[in-house]
Amino acid sequence: MPASSAREIRCGIQRTLDVLGEKWTLLLVREALWGKTRFAEFRVRLGIAPDVLTDRLNKLVDAGVLERRPYREAGEREREEYVLTSTGRALAPVLSALSGWGDAYLPTGHGPASDFRETATGAPVQLAFATRDGHLLEPDAVELVPGPGALSDPRVRIR
View (tube, rainbow, N blue to C red):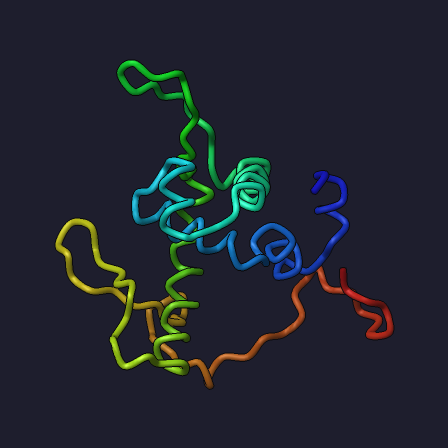
């Protein structure tokens, strides 16, 4: 999406979904968080069609979520791998929230497929709403309200 178009969309959720709103895209980010970087790895792990995979990888590169880096295996031609950027790594809480919701409300009986843990200690972590002073809140104690970028006229579509 051109930068000017993205700036015209006031809703951060919509701007995010314009980049990440397709199923394969978030699954690619999950695989990248698990350390996968290569086209063939993504293809095998996800069973995704090559043309769809190419399109989604290009979209993630264009959005700054992944970056291409050249690599060459001994005796092979140079190829590119796809490495998470800091922007991409910042999606970990998003995937944690989606994973946690799915595990809680759409359980399989097998337990979570993904666990988020503190790198230094391996201790499990969880997402939570917290006030600035660190007081934890339950989701039903939090409301979504229009922010300073919202349009004040409710008849106008927020894009």
